[in-house]
Length: 603
Image (cartoon, rainbow, N blue to C red; front, side, top):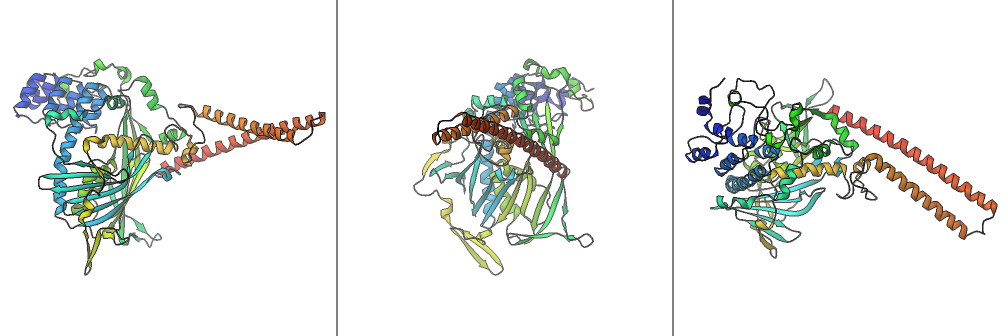
């Protein structure tokens, strides 16, 4: 077992963090003698170690010395996620504040560099059509689509979009233009809202370190993270392999080719694509855990077919209080810092409760050898620009950064989340298919290029100009959380956030006819619906009886008997109608269950 002197020699910063010797840690970091991003033998940087142990003072010192908040441990959890897992609001606030500050600084440094790269490439116009689809039957109709229109001139870029984001329960539409203008001393970014006729202008200047608290999150944002599960979704690229699709009858099969937007493409499939979603709940109260674990509808229960449960918590240790977060397993530093020691499932920090969903997909690529754009020189800088603040562009970037087969990916279909795919298609290059204002095509023999007018990169006349502090910006992680929530709501709630609907209304994308009580069970909702139908039927019967009275003589005994027979008949018909409806409902539930099982099996 490794000696303490050896630990101090190999991991000097980690040793100070382990003992929360923050004063010496501050002095050591000020000397710049040691790598503050070095990982220990368990894959943790000093900051990740301090957060996991819950050592607030060491966390504060490391953040002050600009330790990387974007670091991840060997399980793929970020510093922010580990901070939320501690349940400590002060640590989480410090980490989030520094994370957003570093994000802004990276953006200020990164965008001018991307625009400089683009300046060397030929100008172009292209449209990227995004279609969001789901393998859940009938659910795709509730998923949105959008076409990003991309203009590039020198070091200027403009991107038009109508899919703005997600506001708690619905996809938000609008009409926005993002304009990036490269300059010698930096860059300017404008967000043009064509509906409100407002322009947000950011001159991309660094914020002084002393003003980092301007990035502090709200108390509401902190509490939201501490009362909701920690979720991460990623594609496991280690096992992915590409193979050429085949066409034709068995024995006469050939490599498959398809024409996409006028370009002949080779079709490839990426097999062994695993979309992994991990959810942690150890930081939640028992009430929040129950809410997170309980499926709200039959659809959520059915989706559990594809889940692989992975409980990393160990028996009674799951109920450890926050005061024991640091090292409840009583691991010694000699054990922790010795790579040869098997901890047998033990670890520092609060014992984790992790639920893992693994869904296998087959991603598809349509690749053209003759496409007039360069993926690396022209498209990747655009994807990099959008990936700074767009979660689905970030996932596209991760996918196409792999070693793809040769050719330009005119069309790509990749998984985004557990039940959602994205299909991206490039089209209308240089405005060849449909004329685009302020874009002129130039034919040079067999080569076509284009010229983009300066006016495309100017704010329209008459629009109000505002500063960036007038608008709230989400980080990628927060955008990712909102996207996943919006997907869930789209699949399960076709109405507004106040109108809870059942699975059939959701799958048919029908707005509910009336609001129901929040948190109502399926049985209670069904009983309420039947009661409502009976009341409506009785109301119709009373109206019919009233009309009959108005149009007839005062009833004698025979008339009274007729009325009694009519009521009895109506009640029998009502009972028969409810019985038939119940049988139909059971049949539909069984059909959906079988379809979902087949969908999951085939995937």
